Image (cartoon, rainbow, N blue to C red):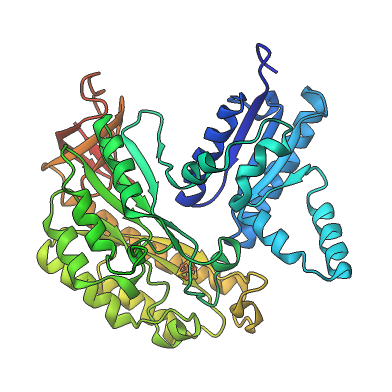
Length: 441
Ligand code: SF4
């Protein structure tokens, strides 16, 4: 309690989608009169918004909760409530089948892994949080709107994350998302546009649209696609940039390539998750495109805007990945001149198709392959970044010495930005390039 108010702390793990969901949770908690705390040990309620993408991600959540319980016991009363939501919560709940024996087994397992946990709530049911905490319920209509019409700001309100869809219908063989987040639901166009417009009118500068397959967005009647939505957003008046994550090559059309390469609203960087350069592995992954499709998209964009930065996601060590498959991945990264890779070693997620595939590589071999990708990408990235030295770039100043470039580099400023510059897009000269990003004057 603080000044008679109950308090909460929220810890978010995982992807942008989770960060956006956490904003929704904050909104709910504040609406029912809870105050957010900076330290977990000071809060009456701790909410863990968890990630299940890999075993490592779940281990992180478990470790964090364990640690908190130890600290909580030492420094404050044991009545602190710990609530789990996010992908782990959904996964555990889905595991609770109708079979009573299975249910008992699962609960035992959960209790053993997280004995400190008080409640589990699926993110799709987060509107039940108030009643779980013994406070007032919302009106149903309010919630229907709040669940969808959510935008989240970072602390200085210049960067907004806008979920435009949730879930996924693709069932890539290694991925748990369709099981944890459910099937694809697209949010209505008018709601997205009005949330973005409001954000821009309040001084927002970087609109980041998010979705598991953001570019697969469709209107309810299926007649309008992602490009139609983007074309509406760029009509909004104001000085702002648009970014979107994560894109699937499967739905990345020529129209989309053309729009992002030629319209100044779009930052000149895109993440396009290829996962592997081997068609055989892509097939086993159920990705429904080939390496050449990815390369063609990259070439189409770069033909129109040669300095466009392309980043991607790669999984190394997928079951059955031969050296020749891995070499194909390295070759594709080179041919596409990829700037940055979000890299993961394959780890089986129970319930997915790939968890039934026989693993063929040792952990050490996966690590070796991971290092080879890092070495290649670091080399490409530093070469690319050096090209900017001495040039001026547009940068969105997000803090005294921090910002994001028009090419989505993280930038550091040698001289602190003025108060007037913070939250604005300004031009600055690049004086140094590092692997991590750019240093500006
Ligand atoms: S496209 Fe594949 S990897 Fe991406 S969320 Fe859907 S199932 Fe998972």
